[in-house]
Length: 354
Ligand code: ZN
Ligand code: ZN
Image (tube, rainbow, N blue to C red; front, side, top):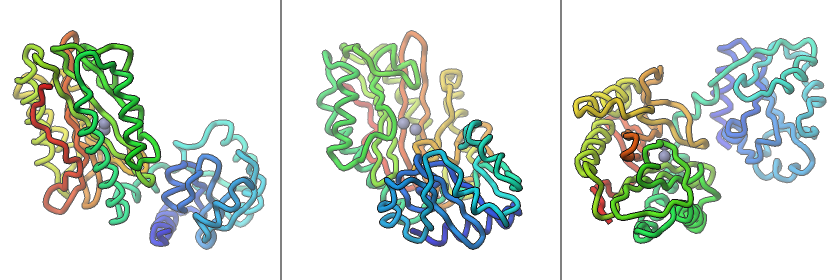
């Protein structure tokens, strides 16, 4: 595991005047230690030491995945061993967004520690990807492209939303993903008017628009792409609105480079749709970071405080959702570069009438 991540985190501890950090988010545990069963473990990083608390089922896995972490046998949700490390640690940070109230009550019984809620320390480090992480994200995107190419011939009148979604999940795994990054979305016609509609028993008809949004996890890293296609004959107004969403997506891609604020990217996309009278139908943010989690920092939205930096990985996914008509969304995942973007989703965005 990358020791520089631990060093960076220790610097952050010093800056926040913390003696240690208790890490409970599974994705953060994986990022900092390499341990992949974070739901059953906790890490304690002090300025000198690093401990992993988990139960005996994982003893061997700790040796394999994170040998530099000091294994401490602890019952699931237990804090006994951690309590023994606490003397000498005055102020310990904990991940405010990743601790249950019940666990917090147990923590509070460990005396005389002062528990300091922190948020986003590790998430900030995670937002900028290393070359090895970028390669995994590129691989996840490539598998997404392959799955899209494979599913296209199956999108036809008579096919069922749910069975297409199931096939996508099967293909993602077959092509090397551990699992899906989120429930695959295949929604048609009026269902497509829900940005995150759930695939159901509905079958496709001529004249449907069909939105597919999916991604797999490759070596821990998520893929995320969306395409919308139509079944011949396309619905009324489809070509025209597709063209406008596509234009807005391109505006988003063109506005991204290191140093630009995330809010600015969102504004430009929104402005483009506004020009076409469609902004009231664009009801979510322009995009989000992707990495160990499907949604992570930074956020490309109107109230984002983040600034794009080189080697961040984000999605650009404007969509319009018109009640009673349907919806169109186009989403690529991109790597932020010094002067622009590397678009890692490579499937065509041309209008597709099947
Ligand atoms: Zn998506
Ligand atoms: Zn997305």
